Each structure stands twice: as structure tokens, then as C-alpha cells.
Length: 347
Picture 1 (tube, rainbow, N blue to C red):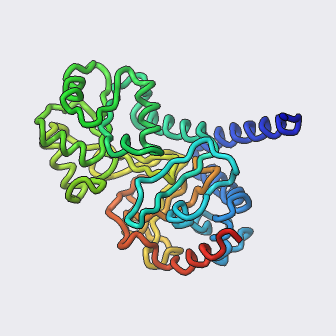
Picture 2 (picture 1 turned 120 degrees about the horizontal axis):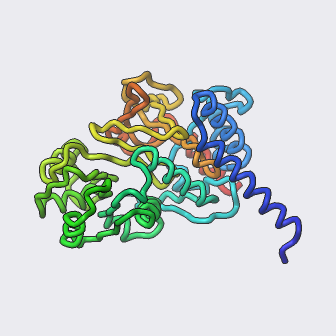
Picture 3 (picture 1 turned 180 degrees about the vertical axis):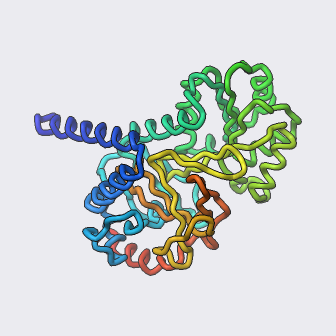
């Protein structure tokens, strides 16, 4: 039976979500970003049990956290072993494509509205409104499994686009649509690396006025090559000057974009910090390579402070690079803490 208390709780929760969403996506200054990050840290410390346990294991006094550098960043692998959420209820669960261990990351998303706001605003910030665009997608490895946050995002963008669609392995149809596109509108082709390479090897096209958006690597489908090698081949075969890229993952609700040259930029509610991969609580200066830490304030109801398994460096004017993976994809200096956290699981 629905009671007055239940109705009030739902109303209060929705009101809080709307207010927080507005605050996050209206960030315009450094001071506002820091204030919102510290507020999110306090909220997640009190409401996300695995994150609180991890912070406690680092020996951090939450009352002493007053700067971004004070905030403990959780290893992203916790999404494979723990329910990283501030809410007992999910609107959707996004999953990763799995790892060599067979464990998938699971992102329990309490507010799909937050995700839609994040990817829509970021896309519009970098590429304009999807209604103005033709948006096509060549993402077979993602379409062939359930729970892909990338497929959710691109599906929503295609629904709003002037013209668009998914193409599994039907390259002939995709080429026909590209050749017949409305050239007065921006055209974007999202594609996973191996699928774009298959297309490029089968056809020599002139896509000089198309934004080709690479969303990931070979995904085990082909021999691994570097991103630079992939982009060079695509540029030559598809007739484009630059290859754009999207940086995202199932554990994040925000994306960064590169317009070429491998330099990514994040939206105002997302921040990249570079840590020393051998001393994960120490940060590198601009231009120095290290492990990528991400602050994603759109992750309000899961965990916003993540140590990824990626290597990169921050660049002038707020950009960053992605330069491979940490050896073994395990974060040195955190192993014992993760073992302790696993032992506490369920306690």
C-alpha cells in the first residue's frame, strides 16, 4: 500500500535529485567545481558503504578533506566486486565487456535522468544539438551484448538526430547512407576501432566532411595496434583529416572527447588528475605521465572519485591524453587495501 510517507519520500528524493543535477551541470567556475566535489565526497562517504570502507582503510579522516588532492580515489576494480551505490534501488545497471578474469564491472545507476543529462549536455557542448546532425553507429561488439552504456547513449542521440541508425556488419548499407546523407548537416559516425578498420579495409571513401568518432580499440577482435596506427590507417582509407575519439566507460556517466591529435577535453563537471602509478596517493605535474584519476560528478549516486587502469598525462588548457594501460591493470600500492576491503565484504 502506498502511504503518505512513501509519497513524501519519493517527492523529496526527486526534488533532491533535480536540485543536485542542476547544481552539477551548471558548474562554471573552479570554486564551484571544488565545492561540489567536496559536497559529493561527504555525501558518498556517508551513503556508499564500499567507498566509505575504502576511505577508512586509507586512514583518511573525512573531516580533514578540504581540497581535491585530499579526496581518496577508489580503484575502479571495486565496480567488479562491490555494489558501488548510494541507493538501494537501480533504474538501470550498466556492465563492462568483461576482463581476462571473467568479472564484469557493474554500475548500478539510481538516476537515468542524470546519465541522459550528462551525455546530452556534453555532446551539445562539443558537437551541437543532435537534432541538427546525422548520426550513424558501427558498434557491433557493443550491440551484441546487454548493458552497454555506450549503446544507451548513442541510441538516445540517434533518436534525436535528423537522420541516423545502427549498422551491425552491413557495411554496404552504411556506405549507401553515408553517400546519400544530407551534406548540409554535420554528420558523425561512431565506431569501435576494429569495425572502423574493417570498413576502411573494404572501402576507400571520401568522408572528409564526416566526423569519424572512434570509441575504443580492437576489443579482442583483431591484432592490437596503437591508437596512432589505427587513426593513421583510418585517415588514409576514409579520407578524413582527423579522427575524433570518445573517452568513457561503464563506471562513468560522463564522457570526454578528442577532436584529433589524441588530446581529450572533459565537460565542466568532469576532471582528470594524474597520479604516480607507483604511489597512488601522490599526484604528477602537468605533462608527466601517470595513472588517470577521474572526478565525475555525474556519478553522484555511485562513486565520483575513481582510479582508472589507464595511463596518460594532463596537457595545457585543460586537455589530457590516454597512453595505454597500467601493467596488469592492477593499481600498485592499493593491493593490500583491496584485500582488506574484500575481507570486510558482507560484514
